[in-house]
Image (tube, rainbow, N blue to C red):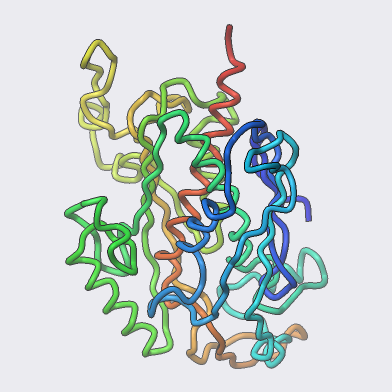
Length: 355
């Protein structure tokens, strides 16, 4: 399995499975001298962890981070940083009952086709629990970006039919769905609970904004900043679509409506609008970077569905166990982490672009 690493100069490699002994990440390329504590990383993991509210899975994992290498006396040494989280609340009993059935919407069939063998406990490597390592690495990437005065803000833009309209960043962490529109947040919560009661699930849209990104990040032509951001968030489990700036809305706009005209403000070149989402020609233009990702409804639902066995026989399946009725709300810190990792990697690459 060769696809577990991401990044060029700031590179992460995640490891571990949902029902294994633990999970983690190895980070290469973090400069020496960065002050970092386990408690700082823990703050980010707490935003992602299971069992944090009534709209998440009931699996109870503390996700206590352990720094295994690369940090000495509270500072990074420049060596690879290894971070570990041990699994504490593993229950594979429900998966033993359906191990020979292909779960609709899951990677069971495709993993069998590719590898001929798979870890059926909670999806193994394909489980969203893999993202523990991403969020841990993202905490370090965020701290490096803070030194460059770059800030990452993520939130739930949409759940089902409910879309946040009155955006107030101060409200994001004041409700359990991380919605910046408090009135819409209540509607999101109610719709998620109704879906859970019916044994079903909902999808959503997560938005991430990067403020303070300087102009010049991105490596044409194949490592464009927007291309790498898209890959970063599309690599997250359950993500089925990405847009930057106005994205797909640009299909119904004219050129004069879509173009962001250049103006001067405080002796600095900016654009009057930000339809491009902060990126032109694959390179950041100094405006806020705006990216949205579509998260599909949780595939594990407590409803009877048609499927087949590994032997190709018709069957019925009902996926019991502990699952999020909407994964979009817990995807927020994961998306923030992937954006942060991408930006710090490109920032370091840009510093070597010219004298």
